[in-house]
Amino acid sequence: MNKPDTPVASNFIRNIIDDDLAANKNDGRVVTRFPPEPNGYLHIGHAKSICLNFGIAAQYNGQCNLRFDDTNPVKENEEFVNAIKADVEWLGFEWDNLKHASDYFDELYNFAVELIKQGKAYVESSSAEEMREMRGTLTEPGTESPYRNRSVEENLDLFARMKAGEFDDGEHVLRAKIDMASGNINMRDPTLYRIRKVDHVRTGKTWSIYPMYDYTHCLSDAMENITHSLCTLEFEDHRPLYDWVLDELKTPAHPQQIEFARLSLEYTILSKRNLIQLVEDKHVTGWDDPRMPTITGIRRRGYTPAAIRDFCDRIGITKNDAWIEMAVLETCIRDDLNEHSPRRMAVIDPIKVVITDLPDGYTETLSFANHPQNEAFGRRDIAFTKEIMIDADDFSENPPPKYQRLVPGGEVRLRGSYVIKCEEVIKNDAGDIVELRCTHDPATLGKKPEGRKVKGVVHWVSATEGVTAEVRLYDRLFNIENPASANTLEDALNPQSMVIHKQCCIEASLADAKPEERFQFERLGYFVADRFEHTNATPVFNRTVTLRDTWAK
Ligand code: ATP
Ligand code: MG
Image (cartoon, rainbow, N blue to C red; front, side):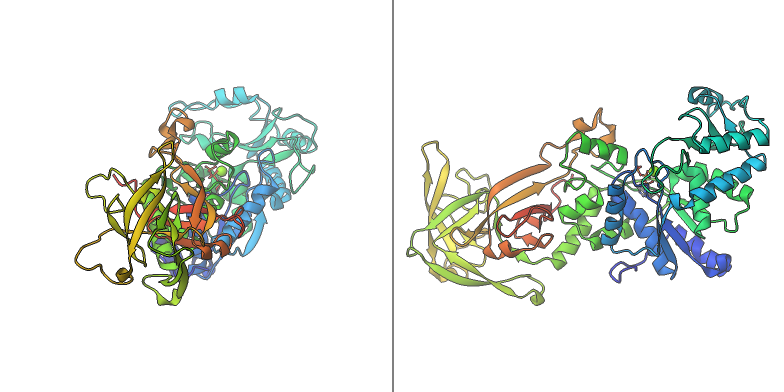
């Protein structure tokens, strides 16, 4: 289901698959999987893996499974499972089969018994601390456990009793018997099973032991007849173990593990552990806070699935870890929204302008194009009235040099309407501006003013016809490129990442927006009606992205 608007870029993984197909490996089948652990919400890094796995399946007329790697019941739950499914679908992908590692718990147990019978696995009864000491280091070999040479019968008996729940957490584990002197620490008799007396969402109380990731993953891949098991580079050192398990057990299928660089995005953290911390410490409003790099967060922020797929395509797939600039992601969403979102006018921080030379109650209907480059978006009517709102930013009593907006005694064009001149600034006792009294030049509707140049153009909304809305201006959550390099995540937070304006004045037509409908607010950026809190009676809009990169160095 690669979308027609997402071109397929070549990469080293596609080259491997092309070669495999040319050699008729796997009988010409291509089967991939996306294997999230349901211990958190998916983030933009996962989107890279999703686009790769599902994209490859679509390109080669193959299949892609969604498989929940649900082997750690302590951290996993149904909320995460449902959120992950919704995110994958929202991104535009359909899985061929929905699987769970827990579907294979019986088979995995039987395979472990098989390894024990072959003398390739044993029950370890040392403490975690003792096991750590025996493991050795990168430069020193490990030492063999005193339990390593238990008889097959004793191992079978102990493993069956581990399964039956006779022991407590940590009393025993099952280990593969490989090589304690291996240069690869993952091969120094890795743990295959540990005791966890915890109920599992899907298997309930059936199990007291749960298989480890490395053991589960390769066997799940093999049982699903996965051909290419694509994972991130940190699993490169685990590949010998992946292959060892499948070779020792002589599984009918032996998928090929291929590693690629994970996504690291500037000004963001992409690790569930840190994202959970942000939620728990209430630095954000939840997993779906529009500042979160989660799929649900960026969805609420107003990103489109097409922009995320385009982003994954533009960054490509390589073997080298690299930081991707936030500007790359933002360019993708600007390009998409520029093309696809209708234009509207909204005033974030309103000042009232009274056009004194119009009669009381004056209303004139002006017609506006909804998109400057695309007539198919049609037109809409906007009421021009005696009282309008402009943004406080668009007026200055003490303008800086080259200021082209409204100043006392100066003129400015109201977008799609008349040129007005500021005749008087009205303030309250506290000295705050409460109103600008202006006159208008009736000869300037759709025409240049006679005999003078008026350069500035400002957006506006009728004060009487416009609607009050809440607008949330979001920016990057962190203000340093690598937030993980700060002493604490808190130190790296951008205090301006969310600025809420509750008394905005928006075009009347925007009140009819549906949740998740997207617009360009002219001169301000791209905005989306909030997925959860926007209603026609109380509109709430989120800023997705500014029109231009305001962070460029
Ligand atoms: P985290 O480090 O955030 O906890 P994880 O790798 O533990 O992520 P999983 O649920 O195990 O999360 O990941 C599912 C798949 O997504 C894995 O194949 C993993 O390699 C891939 N993945 C996770 N993070 C990224 C990333 N930043 N870039 C690309 N792929 C990723
Ligand atoms: Mg993981």
